[in-house]
Image 1: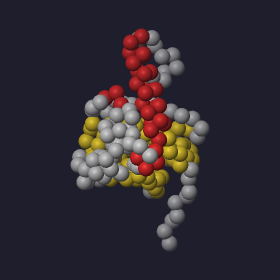
Image 2: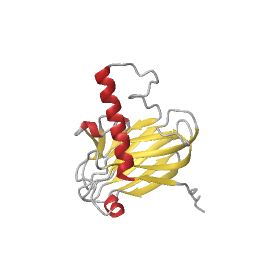
Image 3: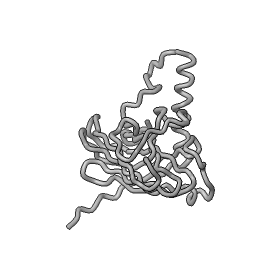
Image 4: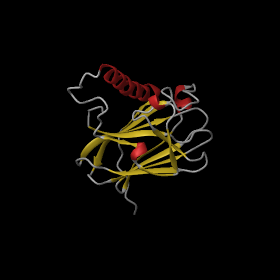
Length: 190
């Protein structure tokens, strides 16, 4: 008998949520770079619990650099074609524990890509990039701050060394873009 995955709480942040995180990171970097005032709390540009998509091992994904300011690490990834799924993998390098796991991705108009997030031997979650249905309007036709969004899976058991894997299946004109995966202690936002 197949092992049933535990039900977990999912929080969909929509365009506003993803938009907020992208702009928070960009504005913090801008003022830090302009002022050159040291960040005593060491927050600007330092995200020890993020796994950047562009630093993952990619298969069927390419780097996307334009526009650079819409990706929190200046780079995002998109599938190599609009007909082939992409996979991004990385090992978790931080302490074992229970985390809220968030995926920052882009949901443009022009298709409804599907995503699957795996950790270790289990499935964390599956979702479809269909903001146009949820919002009743198109967020953007571009990979930009307007199409940036986030989905969070609550109370995920994570072990150091677990393999993190995201599979993005493009649809129509949407190449299943991904910015990063964030692991936050329960109740803490990166």
